[in-house]
Amino acid sequence: MPSNLDYSKVKEFTILPKNGAFYLEMSYEVEKQKHNLDINQALSIDVGTADNLAVCPESVKFYVLTAKAVAVIRYLNGAKRALIALVEKLWDKYAVSSQELEAERSQTLTELNEFLVKLGYVS
Image 1: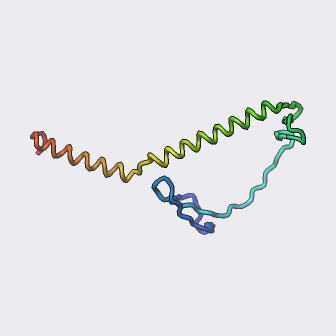
Image 2: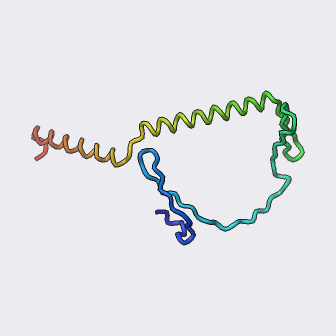
Image 3: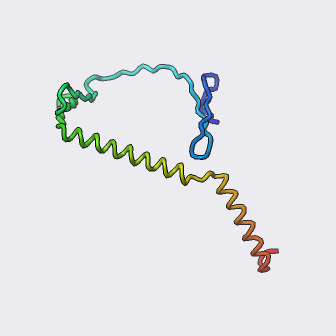
């Protein structure tokens, strides 16, 4: 269990089965923090009402993205999501727990020791 968590603030514990293991999810409240934001240091995106432009003002500079650039960005984001889904699918399919690995290691060490005893290297 995490040592940096105040358990008196935990509101809910949830056990989630995933990847052949169980994960403990803890929901808790944190104090709201006040942030001093400088509006001159912000980046915003205004997609407007037209589908052909997106404007990103940054201080004095403006970046204008055409519809083609926005479409490319959306395509790349979709490709990223597909790649992440593929990796998660492979993880779910081929993931091995540490307990399984340790059990296999113990069995292999036992077989190796028996073989070494038969050869006379270990008594």
